[in-house]
Length: 83
Image (cartoon, rainbow, N blue to C red; front, side, top):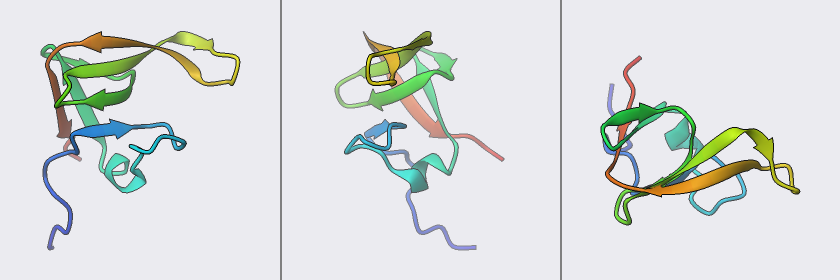
């Protein structure tokens, strides 16, 4: 079985289809994100080179129906989950 894509997640990735950093093929590979050493499941977007993540805040929505997010600075480690 040959792997045509890299084993390293991209530097920046978003789960929002309207974002220029959205990549359905990469997301289908089950990307996980460690932020400051802890696994996070509510990451909307991340950037490794700039050192930040954008996390969803509860179930609240903005006026456009998008989840409310908060941007946090720190060490970001994306990885592909097994299975």
